[in-house]
Image (cartoon, rainbow, N blue to C red; front, side, top):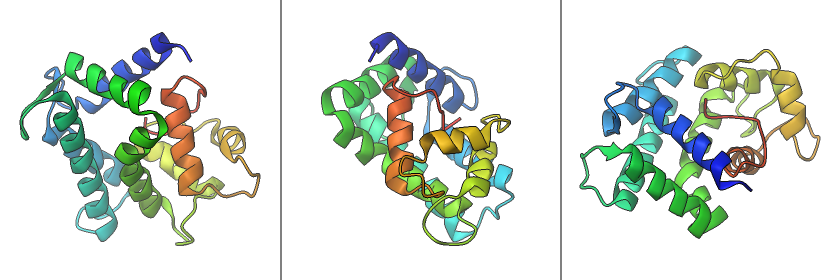
Length: 177
């Protein structure tokens, strides 16, 4: 894996999550991202699924703030974000990445899983991509590409692996927008 590819993707992630564009990531940015996703899915802000997503994003902010060495409620600079996430990717590897991002992936599944089977099918996958702001024109091709076992459904483990592989520069399918 190229650290340059991973770094470029982390810079893009920082810029996307800096929803107010002030150059630092704050809890409000993470809450703004959760609200945007819920709105894109047409979900009620007070629903349990949206509250789970908000909580997952809050947990991610707190995790990153702690890793960046900033007090809770403080902003995380781009450099601090790159350092903290870089350490998570390259020093902690899969376990650290899964610990940080699993709650987000699980919450997104719960938001998109219309038939409540705990997995994402092709139609739900298109909704997911739309919700996070990924152009869905090639959603079916992307779905087939990431459906590792070919069963027509994506489990939490499969989706987390795709997000992780994207950030490690091993796959060009972006699931977090």
